[in-house]
Length: 503
Ligand code: B12
Ligand code: SF4
Image (cartoon, rainbow, N blue to C red):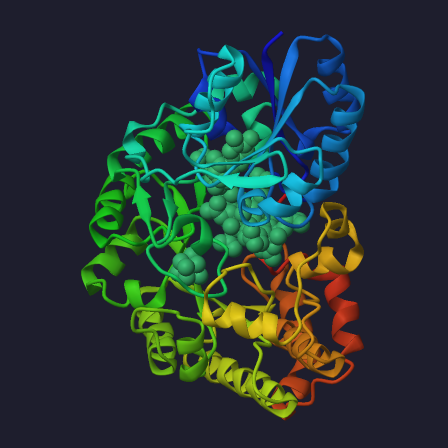
């Protein structure tokens, strides 16, 4: 009567990844409590599955991981149904959406507890307290409602990541064959998702990691990452890894050690890092990374405007000049920089907002000149509740408000907000969004992504040919002919929404 359902709501339509959030929470209770995994990505009738478990009356906890976007489409209605049909079941949410938007979650009436940030200690302690009927109010990293008051307990220091229990891959494999999570991508035939560190030492004011981790970061040792990857290679034949860390490359020493370990193992890898951090790496380290299989690195370039970089509190030393020179530098090592830009930040006037967008479009073109291999990803700025930051103050002052009810997040406009496609921010006018989107279409046409390995060289040439007059002349409006081609051929370009193109 005290079993637990660990639920990963559907997060993508295809290309499913190892659900590391529930896997890690599973590790925290493994061999202590009975639990099952339910992965919405791999279920055809997910609610039936959950209902079937619950009707046995053996399950007392419905624990859900929630990031913004698509996951809400199952997390919200399923939690609501659990509350209505099985009112004694406790509902616990964790993950980035739950931690950042905890107020709407708890006000919904169907979320009992939010785990605020890492759940490795908080989750087993909470279950223990609920089972023993003892006091849970002193458990760190917990948010709950006491009468009408929302209570947030203290945050714990980040745990030594090497001290965490082993991930229960075999247990997951009983519910969903791990093979199903190892897609073919441009990195390799069997690509695993792995998470080797938590948090991030920086405080960019637009970033959802900041309110949760407050500039803290802890990583597993290179040796332990290697050990886990070798287990995945030997047991399931992986030949590629996507590191899902917010910031994999914080420590040059760790990256170099990891590269030494992995270099003869024929594994290609990708991760996310910062330009100013990796620009400090020695040439030898970059050469070693390449030799060790590092194919591409994702960077938040954000903008070519030094004032906005400051406004974003990008920290460190990142500047327009460095973004350009670093793209050039990585070219020497044959590592592809994947630069993401955030366009559409607020400014004092409408014309200034538009000018900033146009300046960044020019800047992106400059980067393509120094390193045409650079992959460009464009986001439209969507605020995150980094309360207290200058940017957030500016955003609220300009009239932006988050939804007040949890279910409002399911409306199509807020879903698009999550995808950073249509930000509902009052300072961004439709013609500005069109400008960004049209430029993106032409850019992607002229420089088809390498991550879509299925695109033949003939198709690439044709799309490039069709797009070339627009790219060269800078005339981006209404690029329907390119969109038409892309719909058929260009499968995927923004790995953060659905992951790299894969099958
Ligand atoms: C993998 C991933 C995806 C995959 C999901 C694949 C899958 N398997 O489901 C894909 C590529 C589909 C994806 C998409 C999106 N993602 Co995403 N994603 C991630 C990523 C890189 C890793 C998540 C992960 O596995 N982490 C590893 C686990 C171990 O860490 P964790 O989730 O933090 O879990 C710990 C705690 O949070 C807590 N916890 C988490 N869940 C639970 C549940 C319970 C019950 C408990 C008790 C505790 C708990 O305990 C865990 C262990 O300590 C994160 C960044 C990151 N490093 O986490 C972004 C991240 C979560 N994504 C983010 C976003 C914004 C998106 C998108 C909405 C939009 C976009 N344009 O990028 C899309 C939306 C998807 C959609 N289709 O609608 C943001 C969320 C920011 C925010 N505003 O809250 C993140 C943080 C990236 C970022 N830095 O901006 N994503
Ligand atoms: S470096 Fe990246 S993960 Fe870290 S705070 Fe900035 S945007 Fe967020």
